[in-house]
Length: 139
Length: 169
Image (tube, rainbow over all chains, first blue to last red; front, side, top):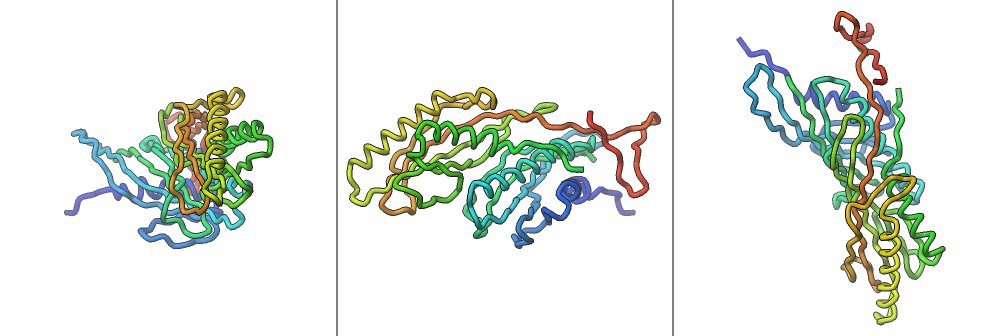
């Protein structure tokens, strides 16, 4: 008989993040999971799982730290102070969203370790912020 | 439901720094936000954050350090010492402005440490001198906290469409 297991990466971690962003931004910030970067409108986000680290507890529950990156791209062709302000406003909204709403799930705890604003692999005409996330989840 | 939030990086960190430098130079030094250089005037100052890093996460707030990068650019077509002296003078002045404003008063930011300066850095720009001023800025943001609405028999109040009520805690 096959074991009953939870697809923690998909169900517990990545879909929780996707659902939270879709609930907050509706269609204004499409989010998808992919290894490649495909342009999906004027602003979009890509979620990538990096690795997970077990907590090594020997209880009935399996706890792990899941490390992910979230890249947020926002088109900026005018490149003035107003568009810079809009970019950072969206980034702050995502950041606040993680702390305010994502932790609603009692088995879910997220830390934004860092956000990097400079990257050599920029898409021309887009500003980019790369979130370094750690999610602690128990299943 | 949209959450309420502050534009922390722009309003609480970048703008106060820019305004203090603008007040000091009174239009003599154009200051702008961008991750790329703009060709404006003989000299200019570009401000942009490199990154932000979590220092401490608390129950209702998070403390980040914002690595702010400021590039002072002055054009010089003759590669002369006058431009070099002008750069040293202006950068020292900027450093002093930052030193005197290491905390934001009504905007409660604090410098984690005093600014560091790199002179004559290499860029892809031609006929310019560039100095880079880096300053780590601490800012703590209080965030909204929500919780699930749990009924007396310890069940979540779930709607027929699968969503649930949340309440501000």
